[in-house]
Length: 156
Length: 156
Image (cartoon, rainbow over all chains, first blue to last red; front, side):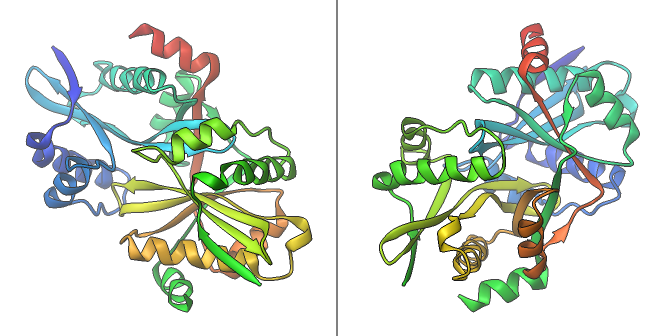
């Protein structure tokens, strides 16, 4: 049976394991550590929120999000990760997690749930299309990081 | 002469005016009001930050950002808006604002500055390319909002 609840400090070891499984699936390295998650998610000013999904008491998946703010739309929710372990798929756990995130967004008066999807991740694209997300094709996502960030930040 | 400083509660009327000028330029309606900005940016738990740029005491532009969190990279900064009024362009005010945002990202131990650009906004693309941002072309941005959000959130 499925149980979904907000993550607490005792979940950080499991959450970190799941995040790294998600990163393996997305073929990207994850930066998180148990210490980072504890410090950044469960201190006096949490920088993110997470929902844990358990199936018959076994960790099955998670949703990871934070609050954003659009000058066009007002307060929003950014869904960073939504993940269900391979052995727990086909039980609508992803649907239930996404539904809970949407309910939180509504309860917090957010205009919507924003998210990024890797363009080769067909199952994710199909999943979000099923839930009628809109793809914002006119927007390009960019990042100032690495040496470019150091170069510009040092001028200051 | 240019002066850049963090926005405070006394700036919200000017900030709101500039946000609506930015939205006109981007051909999108802005949702913000003076009351929203005061409540969401300058209460006990600010949901965004802003920098104000003044040129010879005249409001010339702003940067609007919030903190994000990547499971791949850790704490980040999301630059929602960077805007300079038409009559103040050509004075490197945009460069100075972006540089300040980058310095804040570094000081706050963020992995980088994330941003979205409209694909038809050639001056913005050129500006960010000049500062060596990386365009993350493999990512699609999507949003669950409107009736789709209501439909899914009501199931809960």
